[in-house]
Length: 341
Image (cartoon, rainbow, N blue to C red):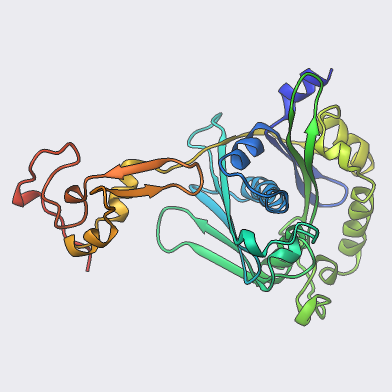
């Protein structure tokens, strides 16, 4: 039963709607995806926990927003953990999986292994960026508040979108029979239907920031409170799994709210880095600039922070003054490229 449950629901996001409450939601479980995200770097446990939380939030939020291309989460602070960045790439076609990647930048010497992970970020901001491939990406930013990344995400939706939103997440290192220890995560996202108008009250968060409890009034408020009370009964082991199937968990939590499920979305680890993309990013530099990037071995190197890929280039093939093609053949003058004005 456990094996069948894992096959069916690991690395999956399942959209649903609670018809009685006018609440929509997502329930997700990550296993192999999360392990692949984390195994790219030897993160300390305190950093791993935050990357796991951010990856789970990214899966839930990314699937909830109709995208053509990419949704990104960025958490920046002045503490030992300086940056957490995750990306969600929407499926390229019906039936294809979505892709997730993530990484963290931190100062190992300043980390306190006994402190709560969120406290290691310090003061900073939580940002959601949506890039649909045309025009400037949309960017929404709110201050870090609430004691967890999920609380920051709730504040973002209340403050920037005026949408009451709730997250309940669980993530931990798990040991399954016959397998080694590895990370698993699961979570639920609840959100009022956007056509239900909210009534903003005075924000109860730090500095007057809105939280999901500060929005709505009347019957909508009652529906939202009822759905949240039911979600409060979920246990971490139910979220993480794998013994409880996602559909069974929805029925257990919300059977009184008439839950309706939609097509599940598979998610995989995926990175868009490539040699061509690195070359394109360096095309704006002159030969003099490229020389400053050249190592003693006569190469320009680049590493992908997300997947760990390592690239090595002949400096003569880079920049808008390149003299050779990527394959080492001489470049004709007519092939020279110039940076955009």
